[in-house]
Amino acid sequence: MTNTEKIDKIYDVVLRIEPMVKAHNKTLYGNGQPGIKERVDVIETVQHECSEHRKEQPANRSNLIAIAALLVSAVALWVLILG
Image (cartoon, rainbow, N blue to C red; front, side, top):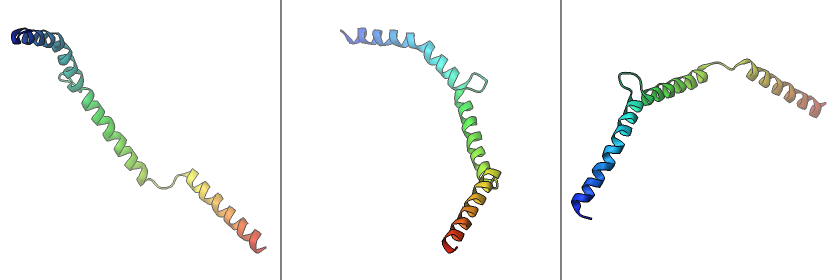
């Protein structure tokens, strides 16, 4: 196989995959609209901000109930040991 034949074969492959590459580019980056890449960036940003927001919130009701149950158990154990 000569170099010209190899180049022609590569050119044929490139011609076949060119539409697919263009479609992927449009899908990933959008065509004047948000593409997948931008949508994923937005989702990751929202998730990151949401997890930070949860860290800032005070303990919720279930946490308070769990702490109260733990304190009651500790007092009962203390009374049992000393009593």
